Amino acid sequence: MARAMFEYTKTILDKVSFDSSLFCKELEKAIKRLLPYEIDELRIWINKLVKTRPDLGQCLIYLKP
Image 1: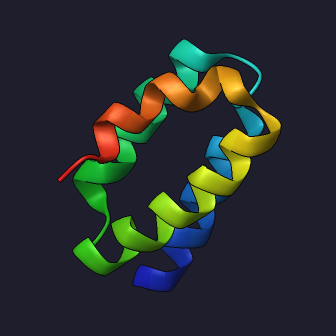
Image 2: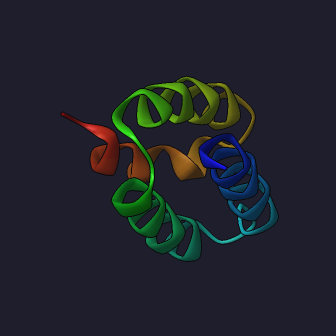
C-alpha cells in the first residue's frame, strides 16, 4: 500500500509540474503522508526533474531535513 502512495505522489507531482506554486503545494502534502525513506526517494526523483525543469528548484526547500 505504501509503495502505491509513493507512485501516486510521483504521478501527481509530474502532472502539476507545469506550475511551480502548485507543485510546491502538492509536495508539502506528499511530505506529510509519505514515510521517511520514501521522502528520500522522492528527493532523488525531484532532483532529476529539476534538471529538466529548473523553475521547480524553489520547491526543494520543502525537502530539506
